[in-house]
Structures are given as C-alpha cells and as structure tokens.
Image (tube, rainbow, N blue to C red):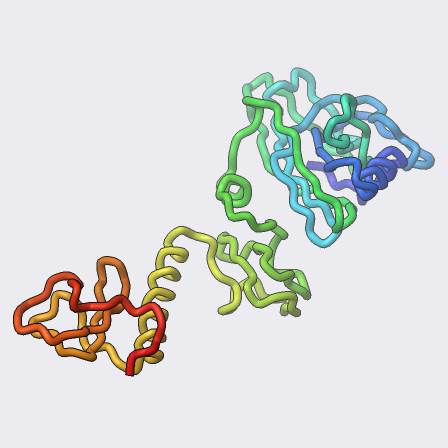
Length: 290
C-alpha cells in the first residue's frame, strides 16, 4: 500500500460532525476508496475522488479519544486493470441520510501500483486508518452483506458482546479511561477497572487493574466472589458449625446448606442425621440471635 499524507477532513465532513454534535444522529462510515488521480489546491473543498477506481469496505471503527480508527479491507478480487493509488477517501453520512459524503481525503506521498486480478485474487490486506473525530460523537459503520471476511481481532472486538467500548492498544498511550477495553501485546482485550488513570506509554502488558474479557475469567471471578461472600458472612455471624447434611445438630449453632447457599440457625438439637433444613431450623435473614 502506498504511503499517504495525513487525512484532511473535508468541509462536508466538518458539517457532518457539526450535525452529529448537534444531536442529529450517529455518524455512519460507509466505505473508503482508492483513485488513480489526485486533486490539488484546497483539499477541504474536495467533494469526490478525482478518479475513483476501487471501493473498500470498512470492517470496524473505534473512537479513541477523538481519533477515529477505521479498519479497512483491501482486495484486488474485482480489479480488472492495475492502477496507481494516487488518492484515498473515506465516506460517511448521518444515520437516516440517503446520500453519503466524502468525509476525508488524502493524496499519496509516493503512489504504488495496485495489482489486477488476472492471476486471481493475489492481494488482500487489512489496514487501520487514523482520522480526527470528536470524542463526544457516536460512530458506527455500514457493511454490505457478503463482501468482507472476518479477522480474529475484529471478532474479538465486535462480535463478543461486552457492553464496553474498544479503545485501542495499551502501548503508546499515556492515559486509560474507566471501564473501557484495551488491546494488550498478547493480542487479548482487557477491561480497565482502575478508573481514569495514567499509563506508561511503553508498556503493552496489562496490570492487575486490567482484567481479561473472557467467559473463563468471568466464571472464575464469580466463584471467587461467592467464596469471599461465604467467608465474609461467616465472619459476620461469628460462627459456622458445618454444612448439611448434619449428623447431630446442636441448638444455637449455624449450619450452611450448599444447595440454596443459605445459612440456618438450629432451634432445637437433633439426635439423628439431618439432610435438609427442617422445622427445627430457621433461615437467617437478620442477625438477632444471641
């Protein structure tokens, strides 16, 4: 892929951001595109690529503190003639709009040849595009059915429902936001439970306040919290004299019933084995026994 200059937000793109900030709706990024010619002069006034050659699909977007990170799929599957990648644009619209606009535009520092498909699909890649966007704006993407393939990284971000915002990589940032997820050097996403805090930009290794977003971790965490709750309750009660079944329950003792995870106060001593709490046991709701 050619080396491109920084993206310029067009006047139409700026107007789109203003509408989104005014509450008219979400920004929907619809596609990106290559062209084999390029505009000169004031690039903010550009409304369309000079000579569009190839539309690209936007697979994912993250809003990283005012920087939009678009993940774009690039393929020569439908390219019949090779061309020079002289220009690149990103298109967007406000949800509900019929037409899209050229949101941003850039030109190549040095153009590259994009290969044709005479020998089949010989070029395929995934690229991240960085552009300015307000951190207050909610953004989404539009995906045309059947024209993209899924990478593991995109699946981890988009198709694992976490209710958390995927911000970006840990390494290279100086601050972490509360309850956002970050990508560590090991390729896994972690939730920041440490609140808004500073971060060492050279580190891509999660600390103890970055927890993995996996079912395994959730299951283990719930088990640990349950054990902690039982231990805490034992401390509050001041006693725990065993679990059901009980061979010979003693009056005024406390017994734990694992099946419903509740404690029972023994009202009357039992001379025989008791498998489940009976009328001689009272479930502890409040601590008034002495």
